[in-house]
Image (cartoon, rainbow, N blue to C red; front, top):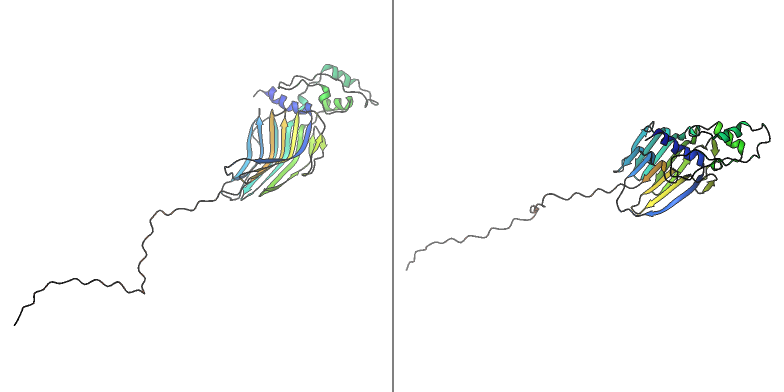
Length: 296
C-alpha cells in the first residue's frame, strides 16, 4: 500500500468531519448454523484491513480470555491495550486509548490563497469573517472534490486555527467497554474527541447527529439478534469515506454452546442371567430301551 494513499484515507475523514451518532437495533438475521460466543477489540475492512484483534472464542462454553498490547502496524488506528473474554452465553471487551487517523491534518497543505488569508487576520473582530470556498488537494479517493467549506468550522479564524495548529488525530477515544449476557448487553464509552474537540455521546437508548460533512459515520451501540439465538453488540462502528474504510471497536457475541450428542452403544445388549430365587427348569427324561424275559 502506498504511503500517500495511507495519508489520504485518514485525511478524508478529517476534512469531511461529519459524524453521526445513532443507536441501532437491527432486525433478526437468518442463520441456521450455531455460532460460539466470542469477542474482539478491533477489526477493520477496506483498504487497510485488520483481523479481529485480540479475539476470544468459546465453542464449548468454557471461559476464555485473550489480550493484546498493540495492533499490527497500520497507518489508520492504534490502541494501547485490549482484552476480550468469551464464555457460556456471555462475552465482554475492554479497549483503551484508541487513536483513529493520527496526525491527519498535518498532512494537508494549505492552498496559497488560504495561507495568505490566515496570515492577514486581524487580532480582533475576525469572528464574522466567512470561510473562503477554496479547493483542497486531491485526496486520491472516489469522493467528491472538497473545499474549505466542507470542514467543520464556523468562520475563517476557526479554519486557520484548525489547519495551522492541527490536532493529533481525527478521533481520540479514552476507552470502550462492551458486555453481553444472553440477549442483553451494554456499552460504556469514555471521553471522545473529534479533531481535538470533546464530543458528548448520546445515551444507549437515544440517538443524536453531530453536524459536519457526509464522509464519516459513527454508529454507537449497534445490536443484532439472529435466528440461531445469538446476540451481538458492537460499541463503535466508524465508517470512513462512505464505506471505503470501516472500523469496528469492541464487539461481543453471546451464544449458548452447541449441545454434545449422546454417544450410541457400540456393542449389542447381553442376555440377562436367570434370577437366583427361581428353580432351574427340569431336564426332560430320556427313554431307555430294554428286554424283559417272559415266564409261564
